Amino acid sequence: MSGGEGRRPEELRSHQWYGTDGLRSFSHRARTRQLGYLPEEHLGKPVIAVLNTWSDINPCHVHLRDRAQAVKRGVWQAGGFPLEFPVSTLSETFQKPTPMLYRNLLALETEELLRSYPVDGAVLMGGCDKSTPALLMGAASVDLPTVFVPAGPMLPGHWRGETLGSGTDMWKYWDEKRAGRLGECELAELESGLARSPGHCMTMGTASTLTAAAETLGVTVPGASSIPAVDSGHDRMAAASGLRIVELVREDLRLSRILTREAYEDAVAAVLALGGSTNAVIHLIAMAGRSGVRLTLDDFDRIARTVPVLANLRPGGRFLMEDFHFAGGMPGFLSRLTDVLHLDRLTVSHPTLREQLAGALVHDEEVIRPRSRPLADEGGVAVLRGNLCPDGAVIKHIAAEPRLLKHTGPAVVFEDYRTMQRTIDDPALGITADHVLVLRGSGPKGGPGMPEYGMLPIPAYLLAQGVRDMVRISDARMSGTSYGACVLHVAPESYVGGPLALVRTGDSITLDVEARTLHLDVDEEELARRRADWTPPPARYERGYGALYTEQITQADTGCDFAFLSRPGTTPDPYAG
Ligand code: FES
Ligand code: MG
Image (cartoon, rainbow, N blue to C red; front, top):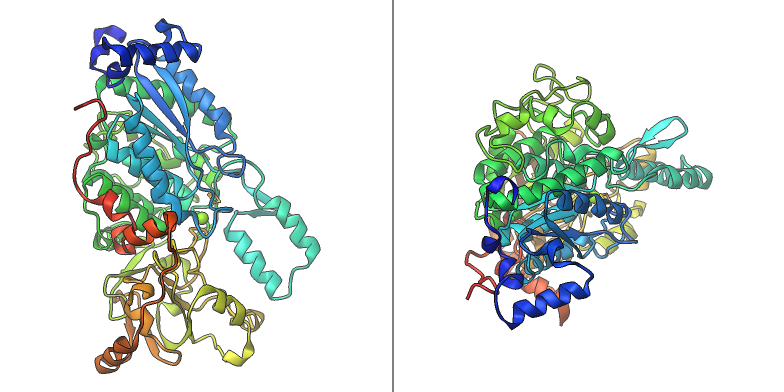
């Protein structure tokens, strides 16, 4: 115990496993000898669980096996005892049908693992899209001292003199190929140029959005989220996180004192001012729920009207995460939002956010714009209501062609993603640039897992005519690296009989982003007739995790958490009783 301050060894949670008289404690000590540790290496020291989402199949986390060593270095240096736990990896690229199906499973694993082992504090390592919310949701439900170590963005991609953003440029060049402007040769070069180092996507996609949100919440060391994954600064950040977690345990500074309503509101403000991913809406609502904070879609819309977009990052803007890092990262960025942030709140590193941001600078005003020169006057996400989405829908309007933000057009309805894929390029459908593409069967239950189908492809013959954006509506999500006039997260979803299930090809639909409305121009009697004719689709899963998922998953507007995980209540500590 340093300087005689903080908690005594007997007050540590792990003391119940190691330090008490009795057979069980003796057995735990004997088994720790079996692991090769001397008593003086661990007895009386804070036990720090390092939860690592490393895997051979996850390119976004492939460096985390090494990085965990830096975390442990910090923990040892501070007098703690680190234990690394491998936990599920959620690879946005490889996991099907979508890692969103498994976010709550990693959250559950995180929660139960921290609770059932002798853990005094946790370091969570991840960054690929759902990993960040999953780890933090689980940790919030256990409420130990916790530090999050973001995986860090990969280096910028390069191809024939152009800088490439993973994801964003993949969609863009795939459309060029579909329009017949790119050959196999160019495609093979792009394959090697899009993603050239370990780390998560380096645009302001879902991964960067959520790690930036974590930094804003105050659960990382300052400046952590934008450090490129392969930069030696990332090692130092990991070591600093290891040092800090031991102090947090001694101070008994638990996650619940950091993850307050004020912190979540600030994370929403930051995400919107970053022009961040629409997925953050779902994840932050779910994370807040685990902290006992009721965050709603209306909070997003309200806060969006108070913050400008200041980060000039793809997909909405020009630069990539490495540029953002050297422009000042989140400390520099947040220093431009101090009038909307709650500066008196606590973070893992400072008694107040005000102190944390003191001295933060912006070094490149093209990447992080001044308030006098925003990219957009309002936050990037708008919440829509109307008879087509009684429980809300979202649109990232800054990533859409402005002419489409007020638009009426006839619907072309696709029952599911496969049908859409098969038929979208068929000229017989007669789709024009004014049509509204509607996809259903892609929500939390129907997808299942609410896949990122929301950026429906533009028919190839329209692409060839130069059409690059259309109004698209679905109960799906959209990749954080996608763009376009895509109305997402329509709730309730079609699979449970939401109004999206009642739309027919040819119906007129009106989108008005300024008025925040989405309207199906069909009268109520006709809708009632269609509703009476609607039959629920058959169950997708008869058994297994999928069946549990379908039974428990909540709708997009409440964060798609599991009902049994998000409801209030306490869980006994294994040794407490
Ligand atoms: Fe992992 Fe994009 S694929 S962050
Ligand atoms: Mg993604």
